[in-house]
Image (cartoon, rainbow, N blue to C red; front, side, top):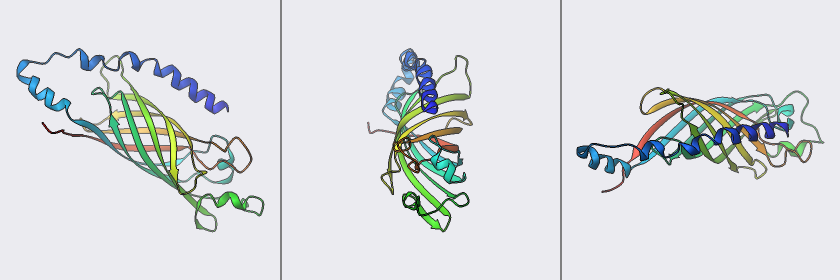
Amino acid sequence: MKTIKNISVLILFFLSVPFCQAFENDSTKVYPKDSLQNQQKKSKGLDLVLICGLGMTTGSTWQDWNSTFTNGPTICLGLEVLFTKAHIFSILAYGHYWATLTKPNQINDYNKSYFNQFIKLSENKFSQYGISLVAKCYFISLAKSKVRINLHGGFLLLSSDRTYSGFDLGLGLNYQLTENFNLSLSESFLINYNGAMSVYAETTPNLLLLNLNYKFRLIGQN
């Protein structure tokens, strides 16, 4: 419960900054007359970001998953839709997959049903996948910088088992490589709905990911 409170305080604190700056950059720009038509054409486009990531699980919020499994590798693939030119607010849909081993002497008659919620790869190796939909908020530094921080919040919605669901909260650090490419290091806290109710109920780990992000634009018709 302490983990959730800390994350909530962090999100509420940082969200007070970008709401004051969300549309300032776009609304105050003055373009030369000869470039106005080009700017209008560009404004009709939709900015998207393709996200590919590799990482590992980093324990779990309620400690049930963490006490049962060892940390293992994870991958993700997502698509982000940007709502402002300054890349402040966005919606991200992404999927993740992890695979890991159970800790010694974890499977017994008492908790056998717990492991049925995962995809069994071998006697002591399990995996799972999930699809999340989250809102993201980026923070602009006062000085020009290639580094930006973001927070996200949403829900883990789809998986092979209905118990693999919950809140998806997280934060990330982004570094711009070029105009279209950037690297991000992100941590997602997957807070399972059932995790606080009973022992051997939590099904979701937390995810640490290193992502390569490609920004591109879909141009609308004139």
